Image (cartoon, rainbow, N blue to C red):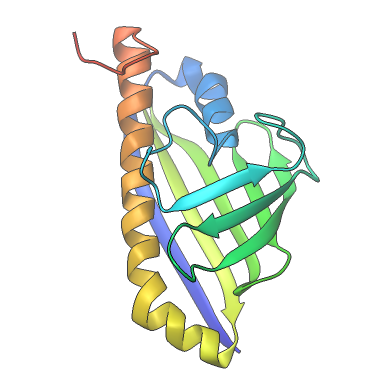
Length: 164
């Protein structure tokens, strides 16, 4: 098994007084209104849409022919700070964590961190195909989250995130 870590970060401009609200949006990762419509990653929440708590189980699937699928469970929620999901089966053995931290009076950092082990043949497929797609998806997901939060909290337009 090969050990793999993967990190993505983005800074967002939003009042720290909105941290709880921003964190709640992070908690619905994979099923939020801001989630990219054409994302290759699909989430099915077995507890029901928007039901997020420790123990919630998801099925995740890459929407490609022969794309991998797996189950993940929310292992830990640190209120207004992070959500950690552990992979239960499939390609990965380990966890992913989405975190939110204040970096200034009007800024926060959102970070995605994955720490997993991947078996031999699966690792080759990961390196050749899915790592690049994973990185591209995460950059797009974080970019959409940034646009949504900054538009919503700066301009008060929750439905479209416009900048008027």
